[in-house]
Length: 144
Image (cartoon, rainbow, N blue to C red):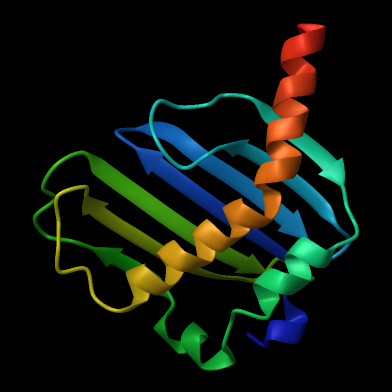
């Protein structure tokens, strides 16, 4: 997959079978987000339109040669709370390249790809935290 072909980015973190984070971003600027990526789970989900700058900034963190390493990485000994972290890239035809990591919170030797995607997800969160927090506060005030 070429970075220029990416139309949507999906990010999911499941911790102990609970959705700690779900994000979907698209090239047109739509963002959908639930959670902060940690426990306790924040169930509030919001979708809105933006100027697509968040999506573009995330694309700038990618390298096309990373896609040759796409797939599932399943740690054989999951120590601690089980975690599944997934980042998927979808093109116009909904063809998908994804990276899925299955490990435990106490695992240490997790390779080189997981730290990259951990930073990528942290960056996505930092780019959307202000917006997400503002929407959560609006929801709390209105009781919606």
